Image 1 (tube, one colour):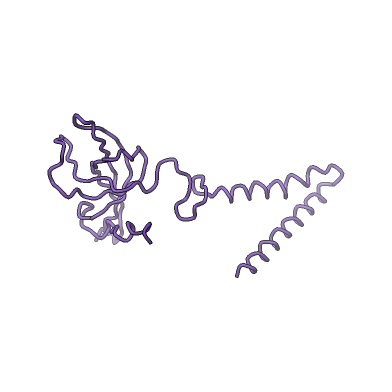
Image 2 (cartoon, helix red, strand yellow):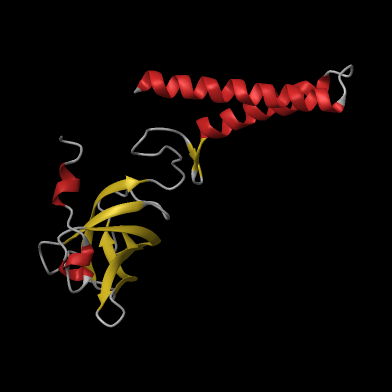
Length: 179
């Protein structure tokens, strides 16, 4: 419960007139910079939010950009972070850029290929387990029957069809056992 506490406090930006009204925002780090004599880290955060259009009766994705303090220097370009408005209006460092937010937490670091929900390794939109299963399936069904030179083409196709039926029956029996 402690880990998901920040999710409970996160309000969806689509409930507000603008993203600036939200208590917390989820955004992508687009640009990094340092300001002041102490070289304090700041980041430009792109926060997408859904805006409802009364005419089309649809939600459209719009983005707002915020400059946010990163006091712990946690963020890198490409990270997804949660930002919240700063409690004090006057920033500790005078800057040309209007810095109104501060970084709360790094939710999904750039380059992290582990899905935070399932804890599985992912490549783009597919899990590594599924890719490996398909690769092994191709070897078992397609390549192994063609390694036998003594079989004719029709016999190799029958052997492939038989292996596919066996695998399907195994999958059905596994799904029945799980239910």
